[in-house]
Length: 361
DNA sequence: AAATACCGCAACCGCGAACCC
DNA sequence: TGGGTTCGCGGTTGCGGTATT
Image (cartoon, rainbow, N blue to C red; front, side):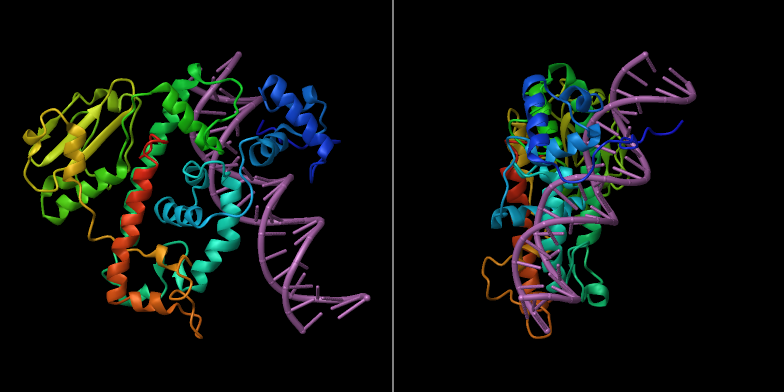
């Protein structure tokens, strides 16, 4: 009963890998693929457990891993994605080509987290710590949480895609694009659904929220598998058939809520609420993507500013003698209002920039 | 120069989900 | 359908290197 402990067997080696072991593992996987990790050590002549071999391969030996210092761009990406996704390192790694989730996790814990803390920003919520009372109106954390719910749903959908695409995936599981297993996920996903449209949770969410801003009651709704509406604040639970059941290929326009689905074996869809409060889709009879593009607006309600503490300027973000970040403290006022838009602009730029390489955005 | 503290990273551990029979 | 197996993820640990005293 119970789990079979992978390293329980006496005689299995633990600890740092030797160059000889690396060579054996590398040579075996290059020749035969990893196959079953559990069976691999014996076949490769290694006195390691399969789990240890997998870790060594995915975090160190894989040929497509970039090592070394993180660039400013990478730092920014990590921080922004962490604000959105939390400690979901594999998901974050999927957006950082050639970086492993373990490496990103380590970098966050040893560098970025400390930097945020030093600057008076809670690395968990990405809010200023001084916000505990003064930012009663601060909606960013709740919004991020909201976004995370959507992202969770997306990840579930992606996971299903991977399963569905296993038939076409390369048995030699060396990813060519991303570095993390999640990157492999994306690669496979794309292979399985080359015409995949994005499950654009961010944009969908923006649209829904913007509509809410306009007190459009229906704006909080998304279509469920029955074609009825439900609140996006609830956890999305896409069954395997959910998206396929959405009957719209093109537009479905119900009041101010618009749903576009691309159900042809892709699990992808765009759901949005009409940010204008009135349906203007007739203006885009042949170009749903353009409609989405044009109708989306930056969410003015979102607040965040983690990009300001990236030291690209170096000067204005320096902590003061009190250990506070002058600019960040200042940003609790008007500067903050300015920075928040930059932050989310960056976020959306990031999202947009990854559109081509990932079905996520 | 030695001792100690700190830091960074590779590796391990445990859990949950997916898979397989 | 249920139970065992495998895999992947996220948290944690421990060790080696570096900085500080």
